[in-house]
Length: 297
Picture 1 (spheres, rainbow, N blue to C red):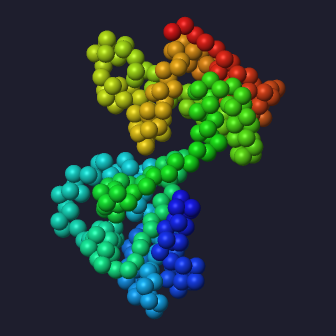
Picture 2: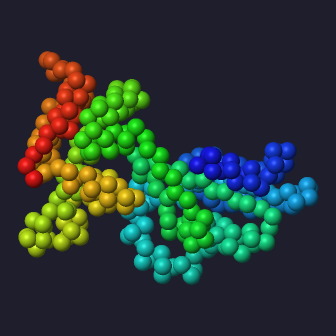
Picture 3: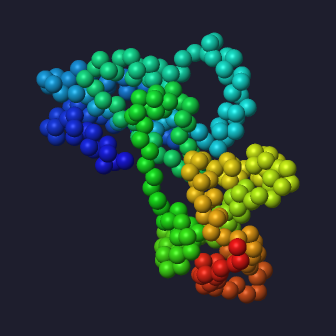
């Protein structure tokens, strides 16, 4: 993202012109709204450069309006109908104002606007594609998504692809990055549950029992979005798990999940535990067994 941003800046401004004609505007806090900075953004873009033929370039970093949080994602669904009914009476939001400016006025100005939005899956911080600015960028072909594969995601890719060497190497790196915190151990169980769910959604047994996938997702899976394979966003996370599930049998997955019980117990040892085994070694043995076992299809 940074390299792409830099390429856009360089395409419109020489190095000598950037000090006077390039601005970066960032929220002062994670919860700061667009209303606080939209005036500054439009003012910068509307300012005529003193230098002939020099453009104004502004980078706006993600304010809260551009994201769905875990809380707002649930509330938005409940209030969707009420919001539509009250839309005419509602005052123009910062996002609506900025979208209108981008669509109608920005093309007439010697200016370029870059908006940088960084998602955080662990905090359920997702780009809100219904936001007027984001929706406009998508319609105009100016919405570009980047996928950064962190060590956590690379580990599970290797694990579910049965690549033992890569999985062990990435697991050790993940533990090192987290300071040997219990989170990786907890995530083993979380991701395996999601894989079992994905396997179930693909099972012909649902159809045989008269249960649609939609009903299964709504009535049989957890309500929490990050614990429900049908609610994972973006949708490609669901597709990845479904593809990975095809490489395992139910027997393999359920057996592996049962073997996680001891490891989960000692992920956060208690003072009352008379003996705590080497959980790092236990985890690596579990990984090797999970990757190496081949059940009947």
